[in-house]
Image (cartoon, rainbow, N blue to C red; front, side, top):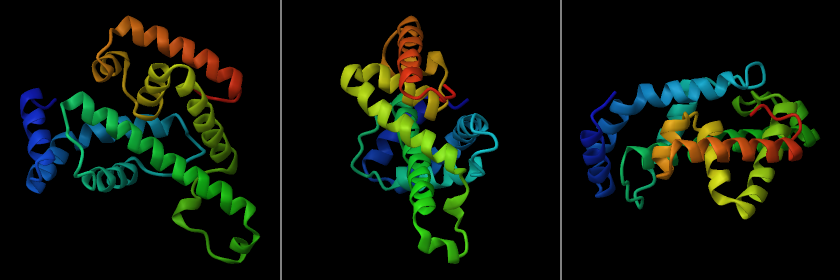
Length: 189
């Protein structure tokens, strides 16, 4: 695991426009991000063929374009990375869902974005809509789900990212999961 102070310094330097710091940062956190994304993709076994490396590469491209972000610390970085991974998976789900409805695509060769099953695409879209509803009721619970489900963070990492206790994360996670299962019964959270 990387040194917290080194990572925070690199994040600050990257925020100040030092692209070299961004590249060094990615080398430091690459394996941890890959592990998180691999865990998230394993949760979708059989329904998503996107590889952890592909997810991390796309997340890196999106993160590196966020020059306006004032990175605070490791937890802040991983919280943003979780959001980016959620968006990538959701973008793929939406594309897959729209491709399923667009008959014109039947004669065209499949693209790399069609690597998600139609059922999984609909589940992710339903989950996103439910998370948006949950965010209006309890923004913190929605954020806990995003960090744990999409970011693959554990209880302690989520607590650190949100600056709350592990007990609060556990409580929010359990409440949010129960609420989400009512909205998305086929959910795997």
